[in-house]
Image 1 (spheres, one colour):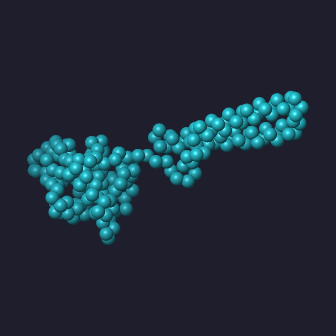
Image 2: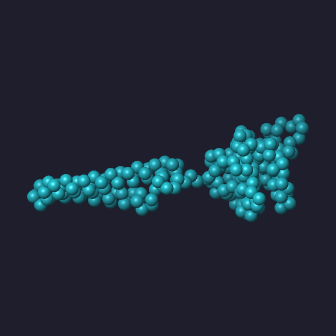
Length: 211
């Protein structure tokens, strides 16, 4: 049983080798498909090593993103909550892996520090990484916390209805002219429309967040 199972594209062998060498120097045992023996049923070997490893490390690249094997191995590691990842080039990570922290190894100064700390927590201390969380987009698609709060929307809607009832009563009793009633109703419609818009925006944000 190895400490770390590395999932990668064989086209990236030369780029993955330095990562393997560094992890070996830190005392971790590594398994990658370079260890497959001739004549062995490789699917059984891969599954056995994948399940028994303490961590699954995916080396993402444009080649790896196009690999069904890499995606399947990564998903299995993620489901087992023992998944970590690095990026070998400027590839856009596929869902849901783009929601997870990734160490950039493509730059002149690779991000070894945070990655090695996370690896130590997982392999040495048995601390599982956080599961991915879907976050709503910023800007217009984000829901303002106060404006989108259900209590505030309910209060504003109730106040609008009470004001509408009061205006009708005042007009019926002669305390308000029809022109004044029309102005009041215009303001109430504006408030109601704003409440409806905020409610729709909040609902859209919740749907985007997976709720």
